[in-house]
Amino acid sequence: MTTRSHSDQPPVSSDPWWMLLCALFVIALCLLALPAIIIGFLMQRVMTRLLSCLWSFGIWVILLIPCVYLLTQWYQHGLQAAMIHEVIGYFLAAKQYQYDLARWPWKRLLAQTWLLWIETLVGIPIAGFWFEQVRSFGGSLVIAAQGYAALGLPEYAHRILDSCSTYILHACSDPMPIIEKLAKRSDWTPRGPRTRKV
Image 1 (tube, rainbow, N blue to C red):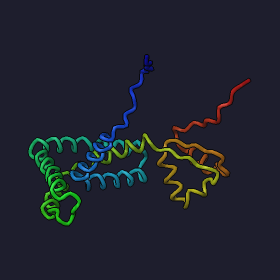
Image 2: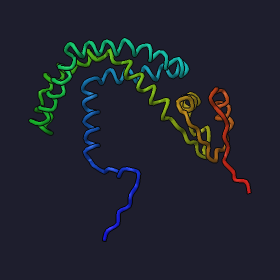
Image 3: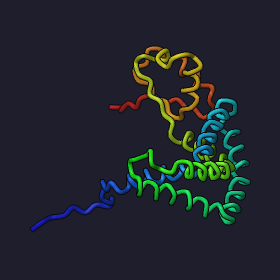
Image 4: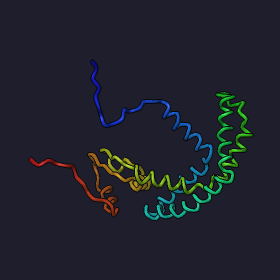
């Protein structure tokens, strides 16, 4: 007789097909809009340095509206066929020539890729908005015993501290520069270690 444990959580999948699917999605995204992704990332970094988080978010939302409109119009009028043709061209070259990159038809493939990259440059606000959302949700910083000086030059230290949303100080030898930096933020509330009363 066998027993089974019942749990409300689904079993964790260790299927390698999900990783392959994600890798193929990233490759296809780079084939379709790599310059737009890079320019959007760089513009988001510059706007983060120059503007507050609220202003940066507002500008990306305003730029996102015409971007989405133009991309949907172009998608309906030929951009979809160009994207499919692009991905299929690379897929067929990979299937036929496999690892022999010297035999791939690079002139034909890159000629189509550049045209598609120019058409998708209008998608820069999508990439910038996405990087802005990733920055606002995932940044955290742990400063160990080395303290503030371990972050490098002052401009690098300020940039690192400005880009994070969660700060954890653990055995920091000189926490005052970090505390002063946090005290300037309007959303900061100090929380110390939790102690249990006996």
